[in-house]
Image (cartoon, rainbow over all chains, first blue to last red; front, top):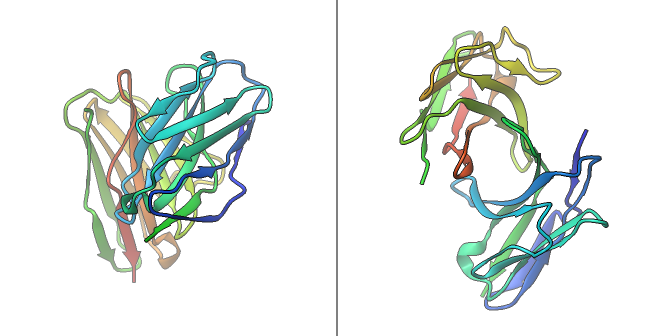
Length: 115
Length: 114
């Protein structure tokens, strides 16, 4: 079974600064996907970024980038130029490769962006 | 992009009654739908996986008779909480797996049982 661990329950960052959210996972799979989801106060789950395990290059989406270390089973999210709208719960998630595979979520990190 | 419409967004029901939550895929066919439960300030817990035209697969510890899942078409999956009790109060979220967009989530349903 897969496990996803987010060791930072809460984080705070000032507007325009950079913050990194940590995520580690445990799996015996070789082919899998990793995700970061954002859940703002509306509670709508929004995909932030996705990484395929077979790709060595770290995924980036505008101000969001990941540091994927497959050997260390680490998948951190860096948010640059933080904005007030980035305030949300952030969940790291794992999905093994295959049809209709389920997501395994971490416990989440609550990020507060302050003025 | 792929959109999943979930209704109702909020529902209050009396203890002992049943409540149905619907999730519709609006612009794609959802062969598989996942149902999650989320307690306040906690993560999403997978309850069950539904596949169109077949019985749902429930996670360990989830009561099949209490949480009835129906996935009768490629665009509609429903979760019925039967004989609801206050401890069933929670936030329920559906999610569909799409070939192009990965996972798409509904907007969630806040169930309060009084």
